[in-house]
Length: 302
Image (cartoon, rainbow, N blue to C red):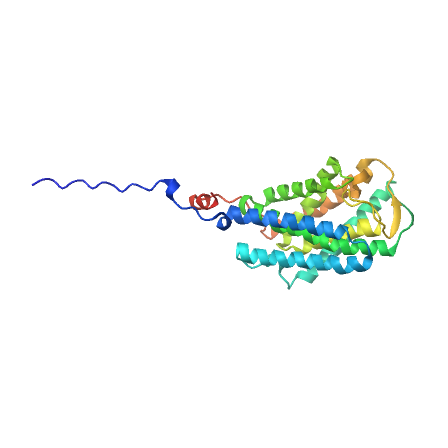
């Protein structure tokens, strides 16, 4: 009898013949879609808010734009990421938004007060209530649109893959650099904004897992520094505010054309808040480490 032939082992199909999932269904595709969509939405929202010229229009349209951005974010998270939007949970929304707004107001008052104590801020007259109210309405849209992009999308997605520290650094740096498009922007101002505001707002998100606290901090700071104290906000255009003020002195003290956000005083004050928020996040176990990619995740991300 002839010996039975040795079976030939089945060869694996070449990698190129394995059908890859569509780009939109991959983690990298979903993340790219979110970033691009909400970057475009932020640009549109900020441009529309900046064009508001009357208090009635600003106080009506500004909050409506903010609510629209939040609604679109909720829809995108549910449709694209297919998960509940826990970062916009309603039970704690009012409390955290109010706490953040009061916190931003307090930090701004302390910063401007210290700058004034060193001779870098002086009130020279009254402005207009209409101008201040216009800024207030505008800032509702600006604060929401920027926090949704930089904390809700960029920070959160980077943290999921590379951990909290990388997310803090990346989102803060991008937050500072994007303000270089403003007319009075400087590289110094962008870097100080990244440290002072970018890190603090990211830390507020880490400490609570919620967008409401950073939105409130952002809103309270902008309203106080720009609408009430009449200073320049992140190198933007000068606007009529509640008072008319001048900021004589060196750039390290006043921030120069970028405004008080480029002052070392503001950096120091907000950095204290950042440290306190990160301590709270650490105690509550919210600091995450980078994920170790598995073979499955590498294939899905390809």
